[in-house]
Length: 141
Image (cartoon, rainbow, N blue to C red):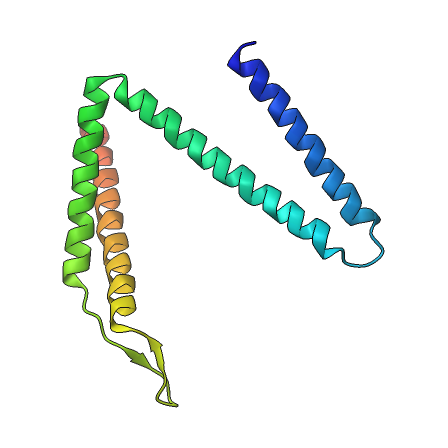
């Protein structure tokens, strides 16, 4: 039995289980939290399984070709450098509400600031890449 046939059968079984849960939810007179929580659990399982499968097959694909592995390594190092720059540029300050209670710690504030700065840097790089690509296309015509 090949992998495609096994996956097809597994998908069919999961689809039937999901359909059965949906029928139980629809037929319930009142909110049936047990069935709903099972449906949510099935959804979490499927998302996790899809993520793991995608990561594993991506890593297998990357490891099969040394050129892909080198490009991936360079991109990963560049991404880590951007993360380091964003974290280094952010400053952490506690956020206090009017009642004097701490809403966000200094470390949490620094991580949020770093995330925003990383987003800004990556957005600027993407915009620059689009502009360079557009200019190259315009000059080549």
